[in-house]
Structures are given as C-alpha cells and as structure tokens.
Image (tube, rainbow, N blue to C red; front, top):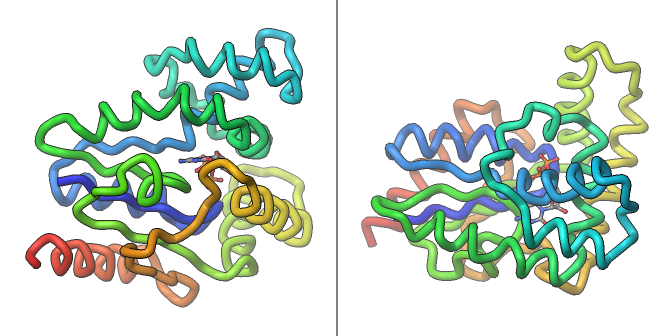
Length: 208
Ligand code: CDP
C-alpha cells in the first residue's frame, strides 16, 4: 500500500505521515529531507544555491544515508531547500530514489509536495493536508519559540507566504493537490483529530 501525503510548509503533514506510517506498519519517507540535504551539501561544499551546475551535481550524488542529520531540520535549510527544489534536473535526480522507496514491500508513506502528482501518481491513497497560512504561521511560531528563537509571528507568516508562492508557482512539479487526492484542512483540528480523519480517508480509499 502506497500512501501519498502532500501539503504546504507547516501544515502538519510530516507529523501526520509518521503517525500514519506507524499505524499501518509502513516505512515513511519525508521527501523534503532530500531537497534539504542537497541544499546542505551545496553550501557545505562552498557553492552558491544559484549555481545550477553545482546544485545538480550535488543532487546526483546525494547519499541517502545522510538524511538523518539533525541539522537538516534547522529553520534556514527549508528555505534553501525550496530554492534548489525549483530546478528540474534536481527533481529528476531525486525521483528514482523516491519511487524505489515506494515500491518496496509492503509499501510506504511518502510526504512532500508532488508525491500524489509526480512521484507516486498511482498511490492507493492520497491526502493533501492544508491549513490557512495564519494557522500554519501560528504553529511554526510556537515551535520556534520553544526552541528559543527570537523570531516574530509576522516574520514567519511572511516566510510561509513566500514559500507557498515559490512552491506552487514553479514550473517543475509545482505543489498542487492531485485531482484524486482527498483534501484535509487541519486549520481547526488538533493532531489527534487530523490523524483520525486521515486514517478514515485512507481506509475509505483502500477498501473501495
Ligand atoms: O517541513 P516543511 O514543510 O517546512 O519543508 P519540507 O517538507 O522539508 O520541504 C522543504 C522544501 O523542499 C519545500 O519548500 C519544497 O520546495 C521542497 N520539496 C519539494 O519540492 N518536493 C517535495 N516532495 C518535498 C519538498
């Protein structure tokens, strides 16, 4: 069984994907980490994110064994990831790894921006998780405050709006809900309610 979870930054799709994977006993791939790791490697190598040739070269030799690096979750890395993710050759260099992960038995949960549209268009269940930009900014602001970061709600809302615009406005695999994906708006839902709703949607899809 392949489950595709897509959605914008801070929509809760990562937490949801991990809970769903545990529930169904499936491995989970946070595909954002691949783009984050490419950005990390480019910067660590002393290259710039607008040096397309270097970015593509790093994407082609990405080592998936380095995806559990805690540094990948740092705030600025998501922003850098979103910049490298707009390059079509970067996306195609990372595609086969994602598809091979999904093909393994007994299946997998993948979360990202283009899982239901490009990576696994034949997934058994697809959920597009969303919430208003204001609610997503509120959640991310709480997270950052808990980490002791001096950043304002307005700054985060700005970043979220910019990232949404970049991710959905790019030509190559833009973030969008697949035609056959269920929409899960978590604006007014806590994680438990979102999880219950997601499991319900998946069971409905997979028992049809
Ligand atoms: O956790 P958050 O939603 O902030 O970010 P993420 O899921 O780790 O993704 C970081 C960036 O990678 C996104 O803004 C996208 O530009 C890119 N990405 C993508 O293009 N396609 C994916 N399947 C996953 C992430």
